[in-house]
Image 1 (cartoon, rainbow, N blue to C red):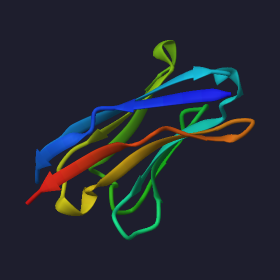
Image 2: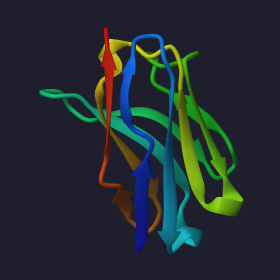
Image 3: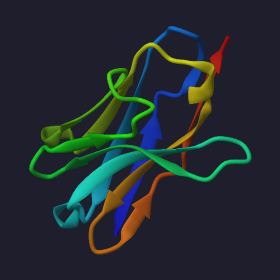
Image 4: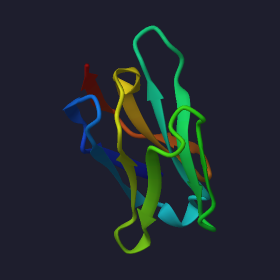
Length: 114
């Protein structure tokens, strides 16, 4: 089993920045990639960014150039640096890990005011 704990959400004005953290514990040796997803009210959960064990990354078109996913292997933590935030970035952000199974964190709320 893998446990994921997110932190770093909050309320920010448009144009501001936030950094989300996701700490992984448990059977972390089984993790092949980690990602951030988000779900806005009334919408489906969508992929924001993913980072593979080899370090390759991919991003949703809507966040390219504004968000950066990174990881600290020593801390078993993945980060999402979010800059130039827009009201449409408002959502619950979920950490995801793919290993023997598909694992999810509890989510952290990000609210961007206009």
